[in-house]
Length: 205
Image (cartoon, rainbow, N blue to C red; front, side, top):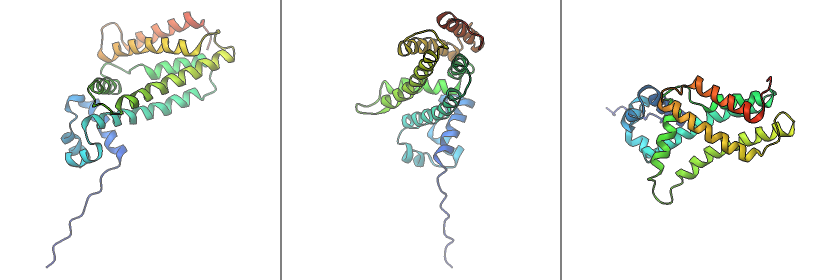
């Protein structure tokens, strides 16, 4: 009697793996995200995952790129809206600032940047991370330039103002992400909006 042929299970789609990785980070933190644990979650062996991602560093970076892709879609939607520029700027800030301490996206962002300090020479990880940062910066510069050209914002250098605003946002965002007392998300949003009122002039938007 012929043996029953073994059914080969197809690997789950890449997005399913990355979705599961982000969910594990949100539920249990980065420490418990191992190739073995992720493999059990998606029904793959750790060796199979390594075949696709090569290293855990690459898995984390691809998960960050996937998460940033979703944020990028939200960002483009708000920037393309017909709302006043200042209202869209506030929405940009809302999207930028972490939701709460240990926000999984920000925890992943911090981990990937930390690991890239020790990347092998010639690795493209830092270039890929820089591309993520440039996308946020490019969209912010474009929004500021639109506001200036339409007379909704005072005259300013969009490039320089964007660099300074993002430095402010990064500092506050890190405080929120690590749970620094006195710098919750709501407090940070008030600080940033007061800064924008002072720097750009308060509006009724």
